[in-house]
Amino acid sequence: MEYKIREIEKRDNKQVENVIRTCLIEFGGNHEGLAWSDPDLGRFSEVYNKKGYKYWVVVDENENVVGGCGIGKLEGTDDVCELQKMYCLKDARGTGISHELMGLALAYAKKYYKRCYIETLSNMIEANKFYKKYGFIKLDGPLVKTEHYACDVWYVREL
Image (cartoon, rainbow, N blue to C red; front, side, top):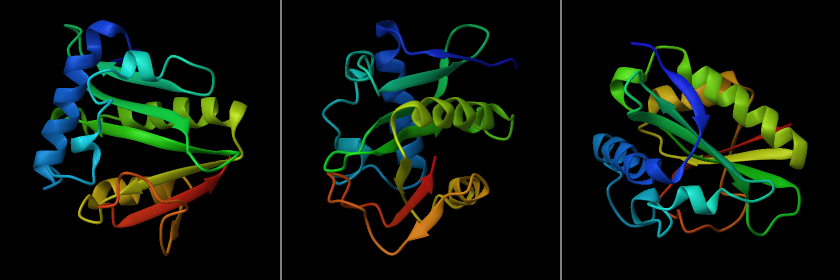
């Protein structure tokens, strides 16, 4: 299967929401305190449509969304962004497309921010290994209080 990455469009909103919900169910994250209850989940094309914010989708040959990743300001900080809603369906994992997504996201983030932050779950073992591979350093707790209070692993990386 061939995948490509492009910026999110309005027509992708529902598919992105479905990808995220599917992945959260897979890892037991279908509850409050995680992206599951994010009020912006179905409207990323609007949310990520301003300076310092961007969301990319991974699509297959039929333009079906199979993954995505965003960069947005970490509220409560001046120069820190957050790698947000990085999810890929099982079939897209291990194809190298996540490395392309991460490269795009970090290159974009570097234009606007000094550090990049991630909140995630400890049972997403491969994702945690992936973040460490990209130089993210594990923290003892969150940088700031966010609506994702159920996350139990936090990382930060200089840009």
